[in-house]
Length: 82
Image 1 (cartoon, rainbow, N blue to C red):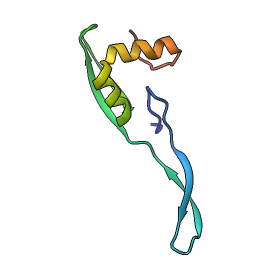
Image 2 (image 1 turned 60 degrees about the vertical axis):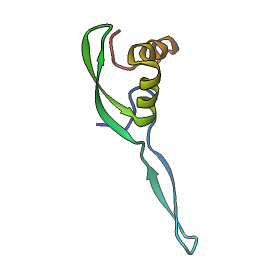
Image 3 (image 1 turned 180 degrees about the vertical axis):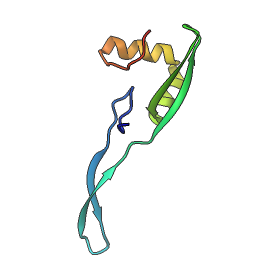
C-alpha cells in the first residue's frame, strides 16, 4: 500500500540528513499514517481508512461524516460513499 493519507493527501517528502561535519545525504520524511476503523452513525456502517494523525484530530473535532462532506464539497476523492 502507498504511504498516502486518504483524506488529507499527505505523502512522503524528501530532504537531507545533515551530519555533524555538515555532509548532506538524501532521506525521506514519511507521514505518520495509521490504519483506523471509524463508525459513521449517520449511515450505520464501519469505514476503514489509512489516515494521518492530523486527520484523526480533525475527525475528532468535526466528526467523520461532516469532514467527509467537507472534503467531497472541495472535490477530494476519499474512496468513501456518503
